Length: 534
Image (cartoon, rainbow, N blue to C red):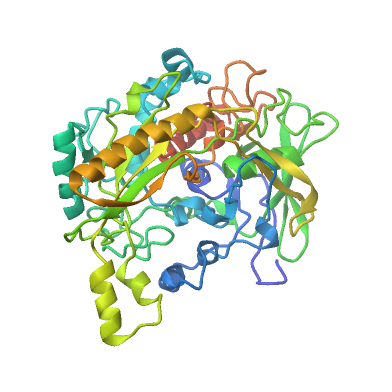
């Protein structure tokens, strides 16, 4: 028992599988294996009460609270350092707790394109994956069903990779501002299409349809947007044990297998969770950090790191965007997600230009709530400001691939420690010239659309103003050659027979599509491989 809150956090005897991390990957693995096997899930953060989501939404919309505060982030527990050429604001968009990153994500779920799996061969940039699109295609379909994805049949997006069936739910209808963009894009010969959302366009999986709160990032009070608590609760219903506030300090091991996950509890004690198999699902930063913290005489440079690549090739998607105002209503900021995009330029990628996609935002400019909670005016003056400042904004965003580079990596800081005395992650983040050129190309198209629309352009997020999408990828790369990466084609570590990694950290390249659906598909594939070997 924990002396602090009365919760039993003792190890589970005779566990078959120990999953480290209760985000989307860990939750799907646990749900898949629970029932037939004794499964225990360890997570560093707390179990959040669903009844508190409205209060968290209120926290999200108040200017006095920054984004990490919505899910109790920050502080000594989440400390990190930056010694790279660019600052990386890690805590702006991560959650430690049951549900992980899906508690605050926007919920866009695209499949990677076929060439993303063969980027070295087809584009001349980066390594090829040891699997291809066909290997993951059935798992993509299953992940869409598990998560609940609203999207088109595939016919409306001729640039998407082939699919075997429609999405589980119909797409969200194009917004009013989408219709304005559509007129401009038609003049320019740019195709628009629906985008797949991990939120309910109709009731699905005992969860309601989206009701339009508009605060998808960082909280959905209605639970219409998928989050990993869905599969954690399902796994617990099958008999899995989920232990919150149990940060894993290290993985004890022999030469070829992990023997226990050593975790701390709020009462200051440490426990050893033994199991037959281990799945590390801590994301692209905490996964390499845990492996580096688990060094030993056998693995002096970190566990599963005989290749020397643990932590290397840290990637993110880069943002390109432009926005402005129109002399007519745009009905912006009614929902917190976008309903139309364009992948038309994605597969033009080569050595010079990276893949990128365009996003037609439904949430440009301030919302009425933001306007009401800022400034000192009241009554008629506030009403006049709302009339003048709300509902005339438009913006086009985009995500750009960053190539994997050894200069970008996650290490351990030699001087700073967290609340448990462990070295904090040190982020070395740099951006390559190919990505910067691609941002310029995306900006050209975005400006052309806004100018055709007749908008007065007020801002451009170009190469000098780009930032991350908070999609952490690449730090435990998948490879066929053990010397070239950390895990094999099944996401099992090359060095350890009973340890898998389920995370975007295994991506050899990142493409320009949001990574969560690929994470989910790989997690289901990992669960199948663990099942076969138990």
